[in-house]
Amino acid sequence: MGGDGALSRAAFSNATVARSAFKVTLGGLFRLIAGISKQAIIAYIFGAGIEMDAYLTAFVIPIYLRTVLLTGLSYVLVPAFIQLETAEREDDAWALVGTFFWLTGGLLTVIAIGGSLFAADIIALAAPGLSPGKADLAARMLAVLMFSVPLAGLGSLTRGIQNARNHFFWPATSTGIGAIGNVMVLLVLYRSAGPLSLAWGYLVAAALQACVTLIPVLRHGWTRLMSLRDSRVHEMVRLMLPFVFFGLLTYSTSLFERYYASGLPDGDLSYLGYASKISEIMMALIGAGIATAIFPAMARAYAEKGEAGLVEKAEYGFRLTLAVAMPALAIVSAVSVPLVTFLFERGAFQHTATLSVSRIVPIVMIGAVVFQMVSNLINRTYYATRDTHTVSIVAAVTSGLYILLAKVLVDTWGYVGLARARPLCGGLALLVLSWLLARKLRSLHTVKLFRDTLMYGVVSLVAFLAARLVTNALALLPALLQSLVALLVAGPLYLAILFRMDREIAVSVLEMTGVRRIVVRARAALRLIAEG
Image (cartoon, rainbow, N blue to C red; front, side):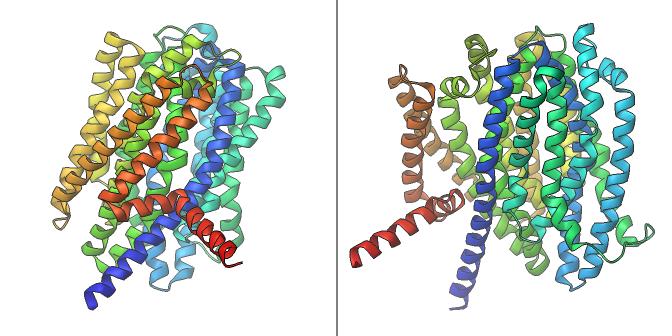
């Protein structure tokens, strides 16, 4: 009986994670719609040419700074916040939040001002292959984009705190709200400001996105701040140092990508950018939910049950992640041409650009969706144990390999080679981290997880073949119709097979996508009709 009770509690807990993931996914659906609209408008106005190349070159600088300086913030702050709350020391928990709120805002504002003042020098260093006109445009864009860094920093901090408080939906919608603001600025300014409207639109988006989680955290507030000499502040800074130190190399891959791409023909960098946008759309829809929802659960499980609780949550998260990521890769790869056609091919975006982008969509998806989703889960498993150095070291080493490999591949295959470099190095990092995690957590069922991976891969291959057959059969129909029919055929087929092979995960997939709720309510409605 005791075993059955434990199993029931575990099942309930996993169901709770799936429902939390659904809230993030629901918010991601809003982000998806807003993101598609934004990218369609950008493609229509600017196409894939010099202006987009300049924007993507400038855009990577603030993204690099944000990633290096902020990646570790939530992973360090959230477990500490939860630990203090669990110990019924809520005042201390919020004092910690307030202290890092002001530290983050102050430091990033100084960096933003410095980056804006020296924008031209930064562009000259980061992308020496740009033509003078393109470099000047990129520098003017960067001077604006730098001020998104402090906004993004405060947004990242408060989003993590809201997740720790079990608030998932509104934080998940923040990117979509920002995208709406971005579109409005573009439509108002692009005639007068030209390509600079891209930079101003992104800045407004960063402000709106930050406000979604900033306002509720500020409304709760804190009654005091911790002294900078407090040992808990020192501990937080110590845990964050590996993220920053190794992140300087780890996240430089984007800088080197722009560096190498600056010598490619006009438009090639844009092809990479648009393919990445499709991956970002998929991550917004399915990628963020699982890791975001499960990290607080991991931290609590580890605090209450130790390694056994953490392993239980990690294994469930790993299976659910693969069961979602692999079919997404399969179906999107099968419909890449009609999907790119529907999303971007209008106005300044021509069919030749569609073919060039769709060619690398599957390559980018492997690294930016599948490997990224699995890495997010594995990384959070380390962070739940307050191990912040292992992931950073492995990522730094494989990033060094990327810098060398990308140069060889771009010289051999151009922008396609550059697209291949990331999944190759990301896959290597994933293998190393998985092996080290298996050694760290001896109770992890690695053989079973490997079998599950193969099973999800085979079922996803069936989904790919079904989607490809549909798109070939409907080649003469509109691109949107091709994509939707392929999804409606391949998706249910995948779930039907998965339901027979792994019922728990299939139910969780239905839960996090909202399908289960629709089915339950439909059955209830039919029952009422029948009884009436």
